[in-house]
Image (cartoon, rainbow, N blue to C red; front, side, top):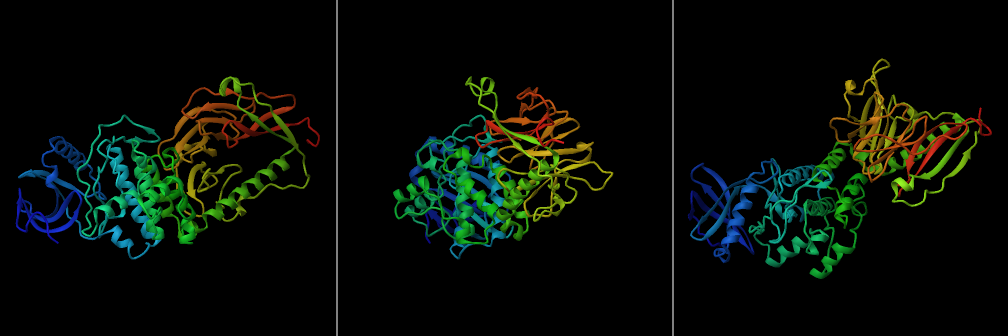
Length: 537
């Protein structure tokens, strides 16, 4: 192929060897760095940008930001320069094929796709934490090298776009807009129309609407990318740009498992969440996304494939265990109620409370969790395990021996390899009664007479409040924790504070236990022991 620069041309210390790619905004050359004696890639902007001083300054500012992204899965930017009215970038020269070319031969093995996905999610996390949003994540911007995948062309933002790094689930202070002038495909046979269409197929709905896009737009594109790696098909298709945009905005892709039956259900859940139309319904950070993928990658293939069925089995097992324990214990009341409206639901009248009795059968036996399959874990104690709301992770307490304190663990459903969240010394005298936050990110538990929380991916535990006599907790999406005690139900913010009384005991009651929020996050169930009811011992 021919280019603007002939072989042998010098751009500063960089001697052009040959053209290797071209697009609507520039050309890419293989070059030799005569100072450091290394091979580099030079991206040359076309001359029609030469008179745009503002864009040249923005281009240089963006280049400095990208140069600061030191990550093994991000292509390194070595230099930026200008000569004879030509702006250019000098980047790491990568040997390998881009992911788009690889996908032309069909889908990847799931293990290979997961390996690439974990690496790219880690690269996105690094970029987002530095205030850089890619905005053009697609297979042709990923090079598969012997050392792993490399992400190219950061900062391909719309000129009016604003960058906003996201930390945890809340947006940080917005950063200045960094428009880009480097939007040029590195595949030589890609036409201008093809570049636009290729970009559209990975654009988030909010980008198509012309709204400000943050890192969650990259997460949408990432979901489309992983979908394509696993299935060999694009997540969204259309015979025209309008039909394609309509598909992205309104339709759902064919289930991955319908295309590749061996797709792990947990992976399909991750991708489906990435592709949510509303940014608030997606993974909120690339860090969280990477952690989810690492859990899936760590699980055996068999565990991944059966995760959905295992999740159903666990739900059924928990219900059976709970029912048998309650029936064997005595006559109980199961109450459905709502958090007091005057203090919590904006001044409305308090909701009515409904109660019904669970009589003793006289024949029920306690449920033996050590015999449960396929999710049994040795040394589980009573109610000391909890399934995450998304059905993928199991939190439980266990101990190495009869003289050891209980420690807190988390593991994927179907996996035999748990992750210890709390060192034994931090859990002493023991951790117990784990429960999950509504977003499956945190595990709540009680230890040393205090209600505490810890991220499921690991980290230091955080104290929430004193919780003597704690008997079960539940956590809604608004960050309220409801927990049981011998004096009634209490509530507290997940961020910490002083517990407030929600229910008080009536005659004959000796406690309100095991609360559980209903899907609306305001109404809840709980159990009550009442020794004065019929059938009580």
